[in-house]
Image (cartoon, rainbow, N blue to C red):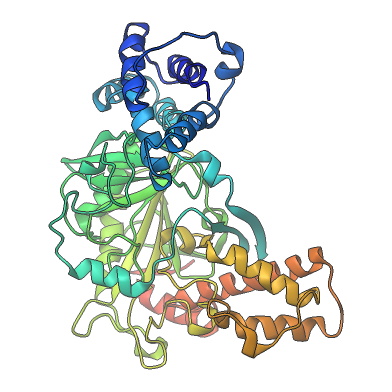
Length: 506
């Protein structure tokens, strides 16, 4: 295998897309040769126009990784690790990336974040090709469109694993998967050699922003506290969300409820989540318009959405922050057992998920009310996905799903293909022959077969029927998470809670 043209292709790619300086090319070439165990070099011409047209490094990187694997330089399971090492050689160092970002940010926050995101793709930190393999579709729901993604990039987590992680005191390095020390780290399950972060000051504290390598949506990333401290949604956290929006007005930013079962998958490290995306919930209209005499300049409404959302809008940041903090305090102590809401037992159960963005020069805050209490009937959470729906989604319903973008486990890709065979009569259904990973879908399979009757569905019809059922389940899961159900009793209970804050219907 003639490897020298591939080395030269990567070097030119780095000059064209990663700002590799001409003065650093020889140095970078020699480092690449060392990684590839080459002791001489023959320079070749490459297809410069084709390389300049690339939007990611796959085609120039893969031949080098394949060469290393075929020649025993790396084992096959070290391909991603080795690719990261090569890309790190030709990428800008963290301080250089920060300097470029800050120069751009002074002129335009949007251009700075656009550049950082593009650099992440070009350096192979953001795995665009793998992201594009995810299965996506839109679902027309009863209260607005839902967006469904089967994420084939990452393993499924359950609520028990998340809760145990919160209790455990890790002493490893880095302390968790989102710590600052992951920048350049390349061992264990985290290959972050080309991760580049940028500093952000929030609430007078040092935080940083990084993009997700397996993004759920455009420019999906997290703002992370530089200190490894647990998540907390308090008055200071709410103020920090607004600080971030002032730093990047084109994004939304949100904080998961800092409780097991209703929070995100990482509760041990304080962080926010956001990006350049208008979520389905953001587009939902008002269900009930509200007012408050003490804050007449804040526009308020209950959102016409599946779960329980209060939307607040105001151009006065100080007053809006003050009111959101009042809502947070009131909800933390609110109990209404007629609708299963108990604020505290031996632990805290009520929490909010606040999401902040800007629209028409106004700050907009959507507050999703959450409760993580369990019962004998619902051991995974009264307001979590109920057992009959966990074949589709068993993980915590964090802020992304709560806003209508469902990230479903990758296992579903193969499982859907198996269910299709039963509907097309390619295979005869038998409960006794279900494999262990398919047993969880028993009820859904039998429901779909009953609906199809004796008909032999085409592959297209089978796929559509399965998707329709998944869409229905996702909608039901969101209703499960609603502390105030979208019915007359729930609406009345919601207004009763809001009245404790001096909020009433217009």
